[in-house]
Image (cartoon, rainbow, N blue to C red; front, side, top):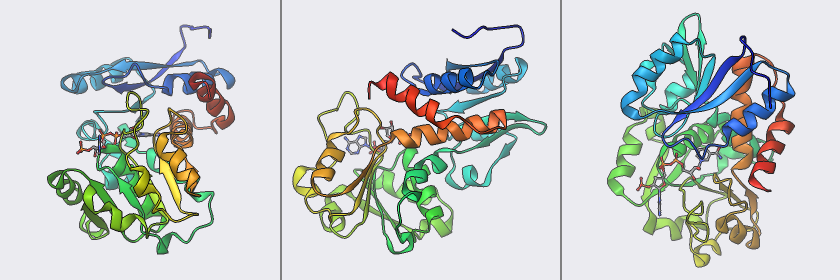
Length: 287
Ligand code: NAP
């Protein structure tokens, strides 16, 4: 147990619910490894209390915090400076105190593309298929565009929500998004080299479920990339089936580690101990 002193500085994560977050595990492991006199705590903050919580954080001189569901979009009006990448996708996951006040950015985009950047692919010629149109899909779209993808299929189960998702982007992005209902997936899946699950299907409590049926996954080309943002269970049913099909599979653990490391680098202004963060998460998840 780390010694808390009168000089200990505070970091944390806000969300509702927050008790299932794995961020405190990896951040406190990193802070202990670096011998930093900081602690990282989970803060349950209701949507209606967001403004009050941020004022309170300034009053107690909190150094910085992560932001998770349901605050990633709602926090934007309370920030003084927002990075271009967070502004582009309309979501913030990392906040820190600066001379200009609260500053925010989005490290999910960086975390998401990190495992893809380790692969040799011509992204401009790939039209990825993204399953789901929620919060995580925003970082995924931002990441895919930054890789160079020119068109992106977004698959959802509610056509109104799909249209709302598309219309929430600036014009240049809107034209890149091809929104389709789930029932059109069969004809799309066979032609893609990158299939990404951003739905919670396959995550606890739906651990025996897959967002895609066994028959549909058979249409995936061998050598295509199947990426599941879920990090536990690991691998998910979706990734197991994709691997049997000969796909290159990526789970959500590295995204979690990389986005966390990037946040810590911002708060501490020094490199984060990636190996320690990865190991602490794997130990905690029993992987
Ligand atoms: P979210 O905002 O609630 O969005 C979930 C999306 O999935 C929505 O579009 C929803 O559709 C769709 N969906 C939910 N259940 C479905 C079902 N049974 N069939 C088809 N579509 C369904 O959640 P999120 O923040 O995007 O998170 C999604 C997943 O990504 C979670 O598993 C989360 O753990 C993971 N994630 C991982 C990382 C990482 O670092 N690895 C980071 C962020 C998120 P409707 O809009 O129609 O409801």
